Length: 187
Image (tube, rainbow, N blue to C red; front, side, top):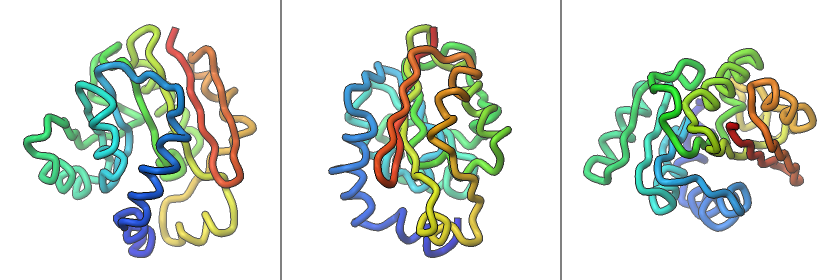
């Protein structure tokens, strides 16, 4: 993540936007259950907001420094932070009632690795569990913010098919002006 992008993601303005607009829109009507996994929390803005939505929250972060910082910051809160790769998760099958990916899929460096992450999300979900989240729609501004970052935007028009190919059912993908949201069920 470049310096500019890191500053945006750590800002109070981003936190307020996430709290008031993005998270309510992205998870509207989604029941995550009592044991939730957040994939790719980065600095943990969304992790803080998810804590009130579930009894147990685990976050898996691929960046070792970000995982360590988040683990230290959330010490004593009951949130478990794991350093690991969302495309090869260190969790047993059917471990979670819900899995979320919140503005992070575009940081996974290839469509093939994104698809592995989708398959892993399905694997670690319990039957009937939900995989939900949202991400940005590829645009000039979105690309500009990510100069020097890993940036592999997800095409909302084909994302539903990719979720189905990963084994999900009841797939919904809805596109807004600058973002899209999704939800899918593990049968």
